[in-house]
Image (cartoon, rainbow, N blue to C red; front, side, top):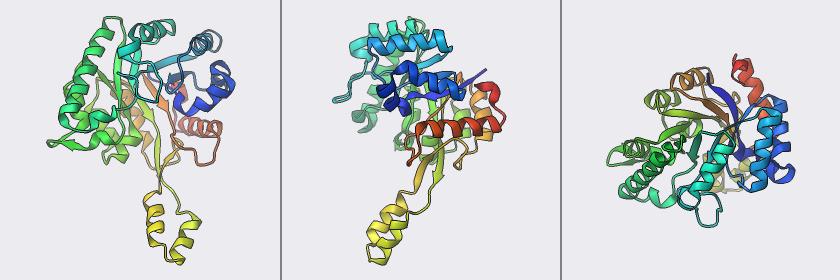
Length: 286
């Protein structure tokens, strides 16, 4: 059975302020019992507190994030430079899933660069399989651009058969595709799904002042920017269909995530998503 958890990217401020254990204590108090670690430094202190959360809070460390190569200005563990450490952290935290959270920017340039990325990722996926660990790729919307008539995500999938998919349903929607059909397409190689809603927000009051003052360009900029991230169940995505599709695709974890909060606290947002998911009948997945 799949488990609903939290993507820790939205908790990085709390990790920094309260520490890993106290942050996950608050996550557990809402009702979430799994977490995917992302944008959290895997320092000895954080790893120790994550391990403590497993024993004292029964928190499931669903997956760890990793880059193939450490991006400039974004210190993080990479498969190229920290392979043994990544494996050791995963074993200590009883985590068998790793995920690449974003396509490296140079790989977006051409189909040749994209294929090179996918083939390198596949080599790491094969090495990780020897350690009992699986590697997955997380999509954004850019992967639904096409090279030579093929979606970039399909090019990645075709050239990295040992790597699975982590499907983010918000970014699928923003990329112009249907989340349910995309989950069906990648059934059997999707171990993780990001539950992130998609809404069209209200035009801000200031935009109408721009219009009245003749700033049509400013008004149109606000018009284009009404697409928002949303708490699960507060937007336009059909989660009553998405969650069964994710389960049918073989998802082990479904992870609540919200990139922007628009003035709400992360705790209020997580509570709203939790309440809406329970109301949809999924209390048994927490």
